Length: 433
Image (cartoon, rainbow, N blue to C red; front, side):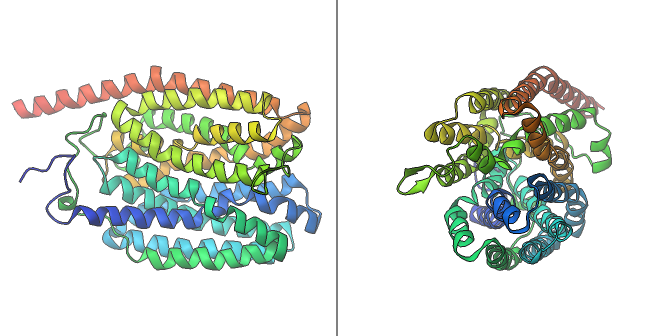
């Protein structure tokens, strides 16, 4: 029986099983989301409790992002090497490390201890993230953008359901107890679900023959990927877009406070900051499957151009017109909606170019660009202090997004079309021999 890309997967298993794998990955990603997106609510309480400088506390955030990303190629290689056992072991260990990191945060009475917690939680989150994304691109060659988008959406939107509980717990129990209980709850769920994950066998997935986007018919190993100029072009693009977004995601509470809108009550007794955090999480998460699905239909580069052009406009408006509560909520949400899709577009593009066999490792190599970009978060504070306003920060973010648009359309797409044509010629030559 011939299986098309739009039908059920290969004969080895039912279609529902791969969707179950995807759902488990999404839930695991939701459980580690607060490590990044809930961080902003802990910053001011920690600063007040210990008289720490905001920039010093935000260094912990940068360390979290760095270790969440820079270790993922090693973690991905371990997952790919262990075969069927790889995903479950890595995600289980990742859940333990993530929990341990937040437990240390709850006990930290020095910046050095806080930094240790950030490193451990980052390593744990990275193991979970890289494994779940790698599993998604392997199970869904026919819907790669959508599958990675849904998986990444768990990380982007996972904090939405806990924004209010976290803020309430910090207000009533303090930030330390909040770290403690969320560490146990989130880490425990990841650890249990990990044991149900595994990669597909060749007979369990549909062939990628009826897709609408360019996909390589061969798989490149990590060494070959690192020698590819196209990989490094994408890497620079990822850094530029990611840096612009992280400057905002780590500073939302601070920006709202500086604009004087943070604690204004605007909806059902909720403040501007609370509403913004919920809406931002929804938009950040929703962007990933939405733009992933769009990229499955019209191509990765065209989707990048649309999303990042809108992102440039959103940053500009956030820096010039977000001084009222609802304007802040709407424009911050637009920034998140036009930034979050990088975590579906770049992994799916990487796998399209370099194939699925080493997908966990190769997408993890690309993901390390987020670690490089993480140091843009404290630099935003420096630029804001130097200029006296957030306007310059958003101008820089807008320019970076527009540069990436040009690179996607006029560098990446021509290179990919050339690679695809060469691959077809080689295939025809081999067939003629």
